[in-house]
Amino acid sequence: MNSAQNTRRYLGKRTKLTDTCCEHRDLPQTMGSKQQAIVVEVLAALDADQLDLPVLPEMVFKIQELRDDPNSSNDQFVELISTDLALSLYLIKAANSAAFFSGQRVGSLQEAIPRLGHRMLYSMVMNLTLTKLFIATSPLIKQKLKELWARSRIVAANCYVLAQKKRYLKPEDAMLAGLVCEIGALPLYLYADRHHPELDPESLDTLISTFSSPISFRLLQSWNFPDAIIDVVADKMNMRGVVQSDRADYVDVVMMANLQAQTDTQRVAWTNVFAAERLGCYPGDCKNFFINNAKYFEETNGMLNIA
Image (cartoon, rainbow, N blue to C red; front, top):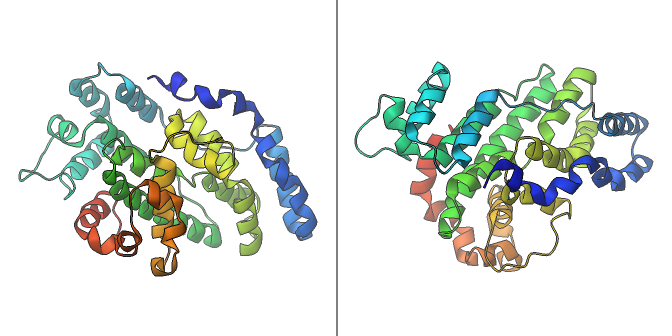
């Protein structure tokens, strides 16, 4: 399935991003004057399509095209990626990590790409690309970006492990969904860094909670992500519609991964978590998630550079 087909379910919503923010147009009544001004400012930028959204390098889209082409070969990936030395070294290092190590180290792209697989290769490229986007100058926003990226990688690791519970789910796609499920916060933090570096933490949090999901929706569309991953954000915005299938999907995986990222999972009422039921996770499994999957996490954390 090509990228145009992948996103056809949401094509009618591409030009209506601000419609998803309409409910937020009433929020300024409960905010301070500074918060009101910034919300109005961001809404105006959204209405005029003038909010700067991160643009992925051309290399990422070329790798995405190869990944989605059933006739692509390892040699085509090697030819493309070998033009980028830093990316090549990163992928060779990833192929030698505990998650993929098979007793013999690889020293070239020709060896690394078959070991990673095309879908995992793309997810790893996105991991590296996104890392380079989380840069700001304001001390507060630098810290917020650091926390966001750390949490995103933890959720991604949780997703990777959880997806292995269902054979029809792809762990590498689940990992990618975890990495980008809150990506809309990134351009908002960068906007605040450029235009309002003096913003206080409360106003900054209001900005993120108000606009993060609809901007995530637009970003994932512009990056040609498949519907299965866009669904994760659409679900937060009540745009997904009624789920007809009994099978777990990436929305369930990311929901569970976020719950597992909390500091005290013992207090979660797991019997009431529908996503846990759909994934076949019993309350005892949920409470002992990290203990039961310690080996997988050791491998996955190394792959994502989680300390």
